[in-house]
Image (cartoon, rainbow, N blue to C red):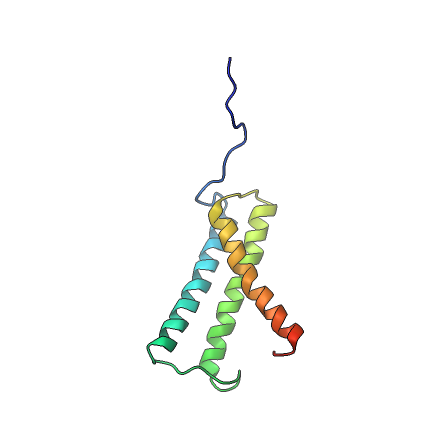
Length: 113
């Protein structure tokens, strides 16, 4: 009788929990918002603002991107911690959510916010 070389399940691709799917959707929303913003700057549709109060539309857009990324971080952590969702998409969504939170904390620490 032989035993299989790996007895634990590997990392899955698609999230199994509803919270994991929400984390992936929120991270995709954040990334697509960033891509649209960069494309609008590159194509000359929108000019970058010098400060936070120059363009309220860009401020609202940026806060929406940041909030969806942080929500992806929180829901991804819940999916990993409580629901034991170990899919690679949830891991990437959680990492995408962690990046804006770390960048905001570094701006606050440097006094540029």
